[in-house]
Image (cartoon, rainbow, N blue to C red):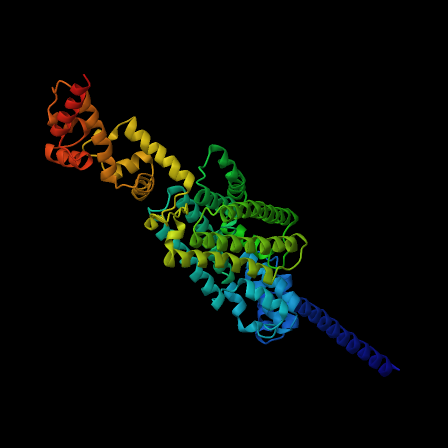
Length: 513
């Protein structure tokens, strides 16, 4: 019995001892598991799983560290984007890409080989094609066209034979077209993200295309003179410029990048979307209205034959290209307003702009005379003036002014009178002044001056019945520098020398008495 009690006691001691060790082991094991969980939540374990391609384990650990202030958020977003790409979760990968780009814009990240698994996915190609810089044949073509336009702006600006106002208008018109085509080239190559301040850099000129072309055609075909009230046509452009400066152009580059990124999927904010649609709609309306007025100017020039054929063809082609741009942009505006994809419509609009620049460039090199205020006036008696650019009404106006200068102001008495001086007083070109004299008086400039001088000289000799005036004094009085030239011109007109003429006049006067 004693031995049995002893055995039971020994068994109990051994059992308690074993249970205690098991309990201790259980506690220690639980503590170890908690430590392991904490460790697994660390960024190091996330990187470990990422490196051994266990992306499903890495992703939740990275996501838990997104708000960890001790870890760069951009680094986590890059790892998440690549992890989701490896698992071919395209939408999730792109969501992380966009969030990363908004924090640290680096489009070269999309070239990482980790995206190869989703590179051909439409969603990935869309964002890649919109932000990764790339130079294509089209971007180079647009750049080439823009450079042609700027070259034309330069050479036409230096052409002093073009009327200053006409020159300014066609130069401005060509410049904004070239600038627009350059902007297209930059956008096509995705360099607007590299240079964010190019954002909307041509929008300020949206309402200038119509007015510039309208007044250029009106001035060059109808001798229209700009008035103060015409400045109202640029008020919409000034208002737009003020708005863009205050609301867009002064934004930081990071803000502009974020705006451009938000528009990749057409996800403009309601505020920006409404403004964009408003500008597009107003530009389409402006182009349509001025297209109508431009048509009226062209048809008037054609009907009244105000222009010679070559210049009429030039204006007709400019008008047709502009109307093409108006139509394509109007359709583009309708599509935009209805929230649809523009696609090829924008390309057509851009092509119309490029065509305008190319045609103007062609004309500037092949037939530059078409720029020179085309006031054509064809006179079969003076074929050399067929391309001078004078309408009948302008020719008559200049003739009347010329007669006034010689009959009232008597500018022929100035001994240094020249064709350039007369042209300056007429506010026209030397060529036009010469044409006026030839066409209306059928004489050369020097013959015209001599005509008035000799007429004045004969009047002086007729009034000098007592012969008190010396012939040289008469010559000086009417504008000659010496007696020889005066005698020669006088004899050519009257077949007599001044002295002989005076004697003959005196005899006639005495015979009457």
